[in-house]
Image (cartoon, rainbow, N blue to C red; front, side, top):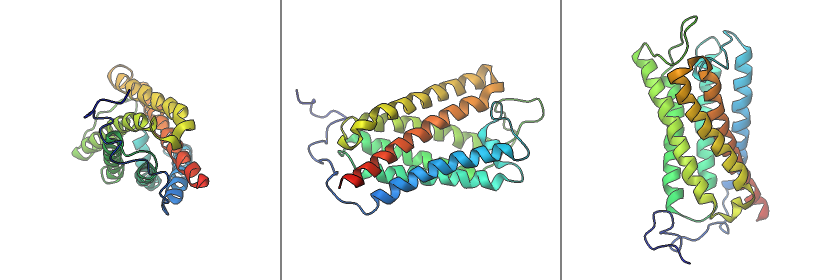
Length: 233
């Protein structure tokens, strides 16, 4: 049965067919770059955890890593996450059918990337000894929390929409399950993060990193789809 005319999720499938047969000089580069940036992000995060002032990955927010003698590395990571986001957008724009879910999801994902880049200019407020949770004490710290929270939420909405789009993208046929796994992980992480802020701030860092793992893993899977597409051409 054909989908109902005018549906938000399917209304333009006939107007704009799949682009899988259209060669793109940017697709391979963007896909490999996105995968590399995901790997670099994880490595830098791990290295920073081993460097002073030794923030707790369980209790402390990841943004704390940008405050300290090696904070510039975390700022590079924020910019790297933004660059990774736009690599994913290039991949998404050049494979699969043109659907409303792809257009809207891409817009949300682009805004999430901009939020990540903005964190560089608004460092977080670090808690004092024995303090947990998110309690900004300055205007800059408040803006940081606003960008970080908005970025997470935009990324999750984008992932839901684009995961729905993947069902109609033949290039992503074998990758839908791992993409869904990482999407679920990101959602669980975000819900856990909200709960930790309210009732268990001592594990805020762990819940935030679970959400990040879901987001990064999902992006990695999408980029794998881009690489596989270029190898088939």
